[in-house]
Length: 427
Ligand SMILES: Cc1cc2nc3c(=O)[nH]c(=O)nc-3n(C[C@H](O)[C@H](O)[C@H](O)COP(=O)(O)O)c2cc1C
Image (tube, rainbow, N blue to C red):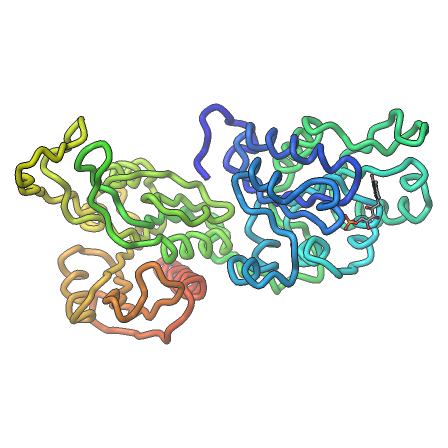
């Protein structure tokens, strides 16, 4: 998501997984979605089965601008994102309203549905906003669960005290949406790191890029012909985004300069959106210095010599030929910098033929340290697809070919390799 200038607070640019439980206050979750978005956050809603008795997934999705997840065994949803990625692809999880039942599931590690499974699988910071009948809230079982959850590092907001249904009075009302948003901001300021679970020690991705700044470009560029037309290419941004996500998981501060793409932003990454090659170069230069620069974007080689201010009309004549001029070469420009050249500069080469020969020529011509070459001919389905076969071409011309892997795995392996190269240079 882009950082909204109107929302510079701690929620700007953050991705929040909002789990809505089946309580009478579920309708307030809709207002919460709106408020979180007003503060610059992107919200991914997840409704329990009971929550859908109170509000519809459609209402939540419409307000969030993202599909609402509902079912652990929904094949379409599982293929698209998967419950484990739901548990990872965010900056924080909010449960509002958190029912007594949900708190019990969380406290005991019982995972019969999508919400409870995600909550068990996540190490993201969690904020719960309980809401229930006062007797349910004060019941020793709920209070035991509350103590367990706090001990597990879960943050809690509310419940508030007040008049409740069935003419009762006491604690049990859902905290107001603005109070939940405030509590979430406070939680994110205090701890944006995964909760510290002793049992995960040694199992998390090693933070091999901690303290490093990694700059990644991704996606295509759009070169305007007139206000409605542009020259573009088929790049989806999936490989570049996967590298950025893997670098962030390895502890780096990551700046992702992205051309126009339809895929979501990786979690924990600062995203700068651009359209043209010239804007991409300017954003890259503004983001320096960096310890590692990975140029995975498919930058247009040419742009129209002239961009018209008004739409070009079809007036019965043959169209004028489109004159093109060359775009700046971002990889060569940054590789050649006398000052502020990142210690490790990696280029991507998308080739349709003579992949390795062209990659070897490219590394010599551009002056970068490593080329990740891939075959993007139509048969391979790499452009826009989910898998990639890459060849690592070094300056001495040596080549290492990796098996066909999904782009996320390619991203992780590349980042592990880059981290090792940086370490070797330091040593
Ligand atoms: C009308 C109605 C209102 C309810 N309100 C609440 C509530 O505010 N808090 C709560 O903990 N449970 C409430 N329940 C009970 C929950 O819906 C029930 O425990 C359910 O299993 C919760 O499922 P979930 O935790 O998966 O959302 C209510 C049930 C009904 C029928």
